[in-house]
Amino acid sequence: MFTKYCKSCDFIPNIICKNNDVMSLLSWAKAGIGIAVLPYSSSLLNTDPHLVRKDIINPVIPSRIYVVWNKDADLSPAAKEFLSLISRKADDKAEKEVPHV
Image (cartoon, rainbow, N blue to C red; front, side):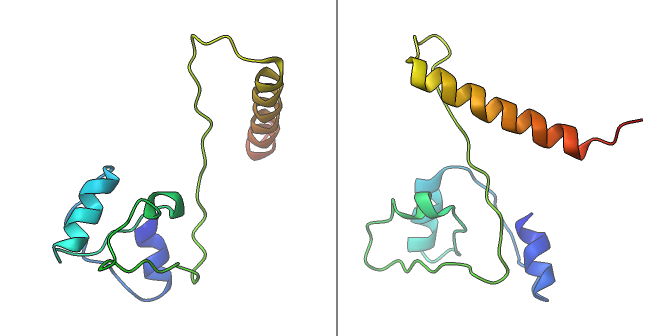
């Protein structure tokens, strides 16, 4: 997805490594190996004053957020209702995206 948005700005990144470990990405950026492209919340983990954080504002890159919970936990009624609500919204969206035959 990131590459697609770069291409829309006539830029093709030279990606040499993809990694899901935020701290590794930040340490590589600190070492000058390259840059790290991170979600906003992950970029807040940076406490090194030598690293610069810039928002990518153009093009707008949509981001996904996730709900995570312990499947074995006894959830509160409010948490159960919230999960039910987002499940219904996800089902509604999926139904709109799938053409009916």
